[in-house]
Image (cartoon, rainbow over all chains, first blue to last red; front, side, top):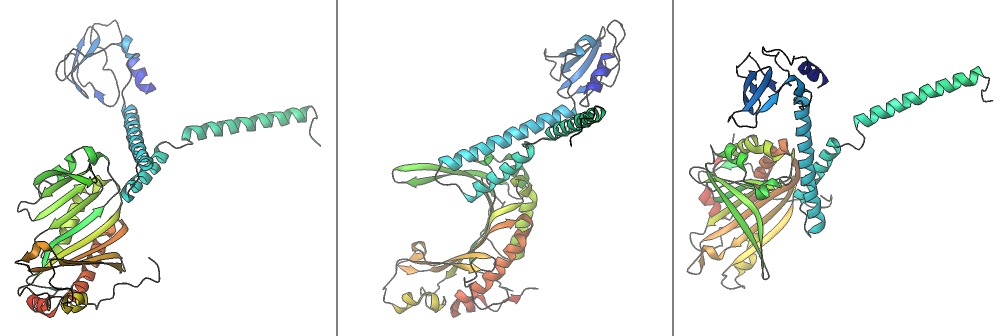
Length: 168
Length: 251
């Protein structure tokens, strides 16, 4: 994402000619020069005027996105990672919602079928996988802390040795 | 299954193909972990996938009647073939194939295979909680007598005449087979009476097993079908066997 933002920031604000094509992520691919068309997911038409890129919706509605180099830093960059995160977020939400509905059914109703129980088990396992109680980031943090503790311990030992403070 | 359980132990007979059969309805039902979205949303993707082979679509809302209460049951979605003799029924936790024109097990099995290939992926599961195969046979009582059409062991009280003329007679037996369980219902339904005389005797065989992996469905129902042939033959009387004839051995 950061690489994309750097690329966007490279376009010039003062030049009257068309600025370099902004790189806005894998889903947006302006492909031609001034006045030409390109595709931007739901937004179909692209136009360049006074160094400013305009993206219009396929219906040509007003809600077009104005993109120039000053604004580029402010606009959230849509790239595949973000889309994946959104999809993953939706999957987590959907899975959780269905799981909660089944849990409510389990505890509120007198009958809970084998098919409901089986789906609840599947969803519980899915939630464990999608939202693990210890994430990869948590592990990285722990490893980092461990590494820092080792360093501190080494430094401490050095100090003890230096000042002859070793334990007997 | 408990090791002390005794299994169905009818004489084994190799399946043969008859030129005619008594099967009124054959059903294969696959129960899967519930899909809550099917409780309130139409099964658009199922419909789209099935419409070529089962173009007639309808929705059925069942109602459960209790004492002074009526509560709605889950929606059922029906997909029928052009000639309306094959029916796929989808509910939030089951998928069933039913036919009123059963001829060969191979045809039936191919249809199930096709169904699994077409919509199996939408079920979001790699196992079925229950797989069932059911054959409902109607033995025509051409002479309005049960005696001779059905194995006497099944109808001893009826044949002895101590019960008098019967307006209805139904019996249910549940037991075990190698692959799971069976339920066998037989008898005379009031719907089949004509001027007080029975015109058909119902033989209803239902085989089922719980917890079956996706890939094992077809081998399982083939075993059920094989088992059914021996059981079915055992339930018949001499008149019914004569009506069926020798049959042709299956390759």
